[in-house]
Image 1 (cartoon, rainbow, N blue to C red):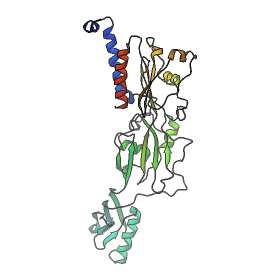
Image 2 (image 1 turned 180 degrees about the vertical axis):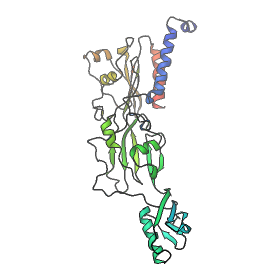
Image 3 (image 1 turned 135 degrees about the vertical axis):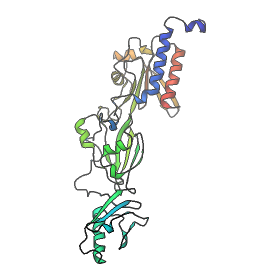
Image 4 (image 1 turned 60 degrees about the horizontal axis):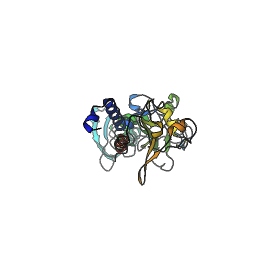
Length: 336
């Protein structure tokens, strides 16, 4: 058949449409996380703490850390009944604030309550105010940050004053990506004992996971295991494997299990032309599978690995067309 005639052959428009749809699915597959952890910023499917993780949220026996004053913080200092001594100051690089009458006061490392007590003591010792009542309001904590990296939309450092809970941190960072996995929180002085939070859709665990975040905490959101099912299936896309999916270390993740997630093959699927596309250290590897026999229980059910692509072509597709689709799919998912 001539190339020009092929363009107008029967059913060609339908075939081209299917090809375009497959390519579009490949491009956005990573964003289609069926059973995925959805953005915590919009309140859907919040995250929750795992029951069998290495460490648990902060225990009651652990001394609570406090927001402390540091260099470049802005303070509003006022003395009750003496408005002349009220002033707005910025803590200098040495950790001191220069106040009226008493001069420099070292406030670095102090909470606002502790700073109040120090200032009151110096006002009394200098005989400036007999019984002072000082208020120190930290207008801006520029020295206290929470670090958020990994699978969030806007990783970076955020002020600790506005980040009091884990979900606050997610919101500050623009929410979680669809492929967000476990959350590791490393606290100052506890580098070898991080707190682990897993992502799940369980609403009860979700409330337990919203633990307190303190200044200096480093939050790292790992990428969850994901596999792709593309081609002639009912629900093609990328499937994030949450920690409550009963798949431990991916050992139980098989072709049939992933095919079930995609609601099975379509009628027009060429089952015995299916293949697993896998990225290895030596390049892209294609593993042909006889899906018809696997579904009938006459062949072993192959185990999948993270970021594998299960591709099920249609009966209408030619070898050449399958090759083009595979190449474009691999390039879009693996970003080659």
